[in-house]
Length: 474
Image (cartoon, rainbow, N blue to C red; front, side, top):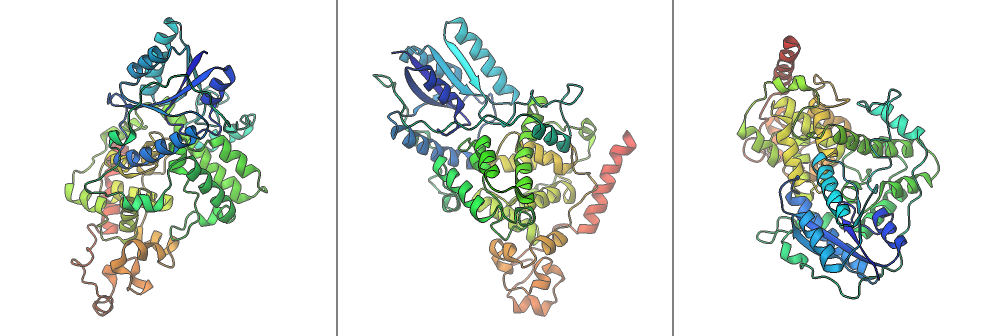
């Protein structure tokens, strides 16, 4: 019986899994494999992502075993491990889902060439996007650098192929190759276990992804357009980590949403799926998206170095309640509401003048949905140096943002509990509260809660002056 490998990467699911479906359609035995890349030649997963990866791999192995197969785990250089597995199993073909960062593309192309030269079929498939980056082009044949025309072009294209259901059975080889034990990889923290909050919030794996999608469609899609900006409510999909790890395909999400009655809420949600596509489009064409400003004039920006301010931002101790709530939510759960992500990112880059790459690295390490395309593109968007970016002079006022989008104070009171007893009129700017009100709430500024590390108006003026240096140098 012929043997084919299916190399799982950022596509940890069985439903709508094109690489697996193609291998099964070809007939013969299938060996699913995952390789933990330890070469450091590509971006290493952050701590929160490693926690999620453990749960996702465990869930995938359980799902495979229910169908007569199992997940073979190896670690080291992926190309070396794949070639060893081919030799061990006698596989005549391998299938994988494409990834779009240049380092991944180059490594895949080199491996594909070597395998084909040795007589092994190597097939790559699109399982991560609705449309391949090279398929969505401008009228002149170029690539889009602005979201709205990009998404319009996507919507004008033929609909993606229908999702392929998960197989009921997978035929494995007569003898399974050796596999690492997942626990041996030590992807999850033990001493101390800082991930208790992550475990309370998330269920990694395909079943968790499908349950999250169903819950969103039933309870939050209606009203999404307005509710998505309110961090104190469960009004967003929270599908981002499941999409980042490929536990859910974008085609399945698209199909599920379009099965509901058409609405402005559905259109807005699908546009957010479009932003994910746009970010991967940018990464494909701008390979160092996480390290180099998309707009080269920002290479001369006068960033500040302020270790104390950076630490205060990371720990949620800036003195601005909405910013601090977001950073504490991130540290506890590995996730942050999108509206608040924009506020905390703007605060780091514009209030503190700290390089956006510092924020991108922190999010990469602490987000369970850290994605090389979305994370970098979003940071560049807020900083004003990215494609279709928010103008640099747009400086979010954390007080006004809190008053507008956390009007009842539910979000701040949850994540900054030391302020919970403050009357609402003072919740988003406690430094302006009369001393008697602070005392009644049991708050001593500078002790129970920090004073603002910068003053908003002064910080905004400084940021605009820094931006002016770019215009003057142009």
